[in-house]
Image 1 (cartoon, rainbow, N blue to C red):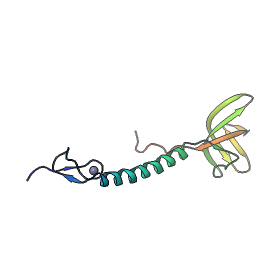
Image 2: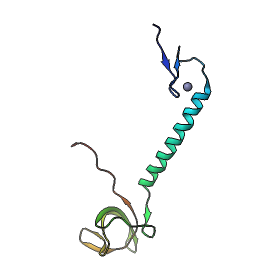
Image 3: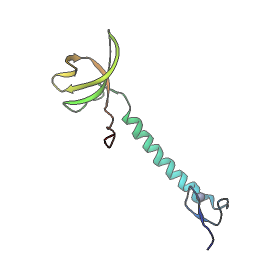
Image 4: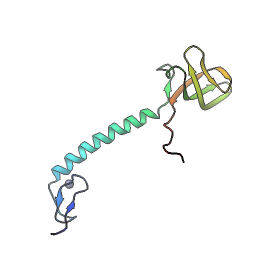
Length: 111
Ligand SMILES: [Zn+2]
């Protein structure tokens, strides 16, 4: 039995790696892969986007990465958001936050 190869894109079985084959199947594969990657990229961009507090706020009593921009300068730190108490951080309260984003998912495993 001779060795078989598969196209890296469409998966079509080929007699050799450099065999020319119907590019329509490759094109279909690349089109659907491109759509999948575009959607994944949009989702990842949304996860790391600074959300203006005017747009929406975090869930009540959650920590978030917060951006402050006031007369003391710019600061990025983990803050707690509470619906009635507002933003706080290490004993500082009533902090004016302009943007925030959810904290990243912690790494899996113990190391
Ligand atoms: Zn192919």
